[in-house]
Length: 145
Image 1 (cartoon, rainbow, N blue to C red):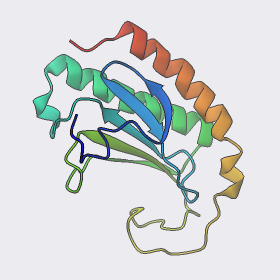
Image 2: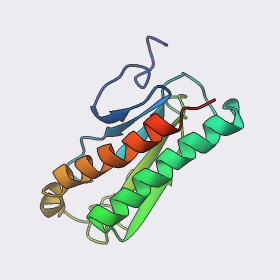
Image 3: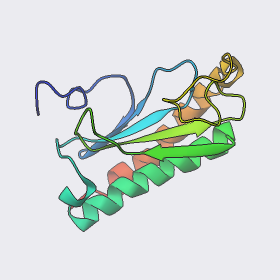
């Protein structure tokens, strides 16, 4: 663990944590359901993982995307793995709606309108329960090699 890396320190609302990864619900009132999938080990790139670890991590990302789509029914899902500021392997899984504050821009782009996400906050308990249930299957049955 690196002391100066914010992703090495378990923080935020952790929905599920497995031996190699965790899923965190980001506290962003404009984007209810915004999740991060974080690899526990401090590494920079997907290719630093062995193939089985890469597959496991992407399976988690895809599962999070699937549950977000089922529960929140967004217009689009944005997936991003940057690491320019925090070079620790993680993925952003962001549900996007045509009425969100940035749409059609990236969530880090120019704001286009006021917030309209309050009605989606009510779905977060359902989202969290479904993610926990389905991530537990991956966490128990699919340890990374």
